[in-house]
Length: 317
Image (cartoon, rainbow, N blue to C red; front, side, top):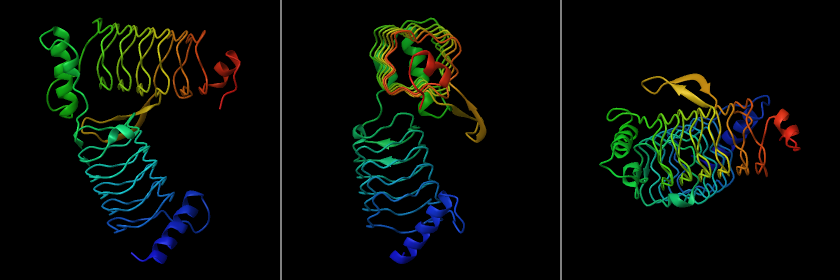
């Protein structure tokens, strides 16, 4: 594609994003932009499936909500890119640089991340099932005794997650104890943890999306960067928990075959006890907060609904 042609397409797309007359959502499906320098370019919501960005420079580019199905990013520089809610199914990112890249809400099923240092990227809230990576996400079953009831339940849940629901079954750990366990980065999405005891457990970066956690004991647990999108935490105990950077966003319900429904389930913190918890930088504006106990909580940079912002003497964002 010629530079002038691309420039014109991008200009019209910017007008489209701003709602200006003459704007047009860009269609760059199967375009070859290999080797281009596109730092800080705004490509959000574009139709770009099959596009080639081989060895391209996209530093600080905005690719949020962009359809990148089957896109090629081999050896591309994606430093500090915004890829939130992007479709990266079957995309090839082999050898790409993703330092500081944000993948929150991105679907990465079948994507190739060989030779990519994902430890330097923000994968909180990303859907990584069946993604091809050099170092797979740690297995839940190696954190507990495999021969115990809890170990067998978790092993089956891991199989269920990794197979997309074709094998195994979602975990039911209601009332079970995982206190003091090291379960960092573990995926409990879709599990039932009603009344589970996770006291002082290390759950940094763990996923609890659509997880049933009513009455769960998470007191003093390390939940920094964990995802509670669509999670039910009614009457849960989170006193003195570390929740800095955790995600509490609505999550879209899907049909049995993975199709979008347009219906979203908000995280529920009704009557939850978050007293003394560290909520630094947490956004709770989309969560259900009825009689939630915030007494003594650390709220530096937190975003709360107006009625709670006034209660704790802070302004809402």
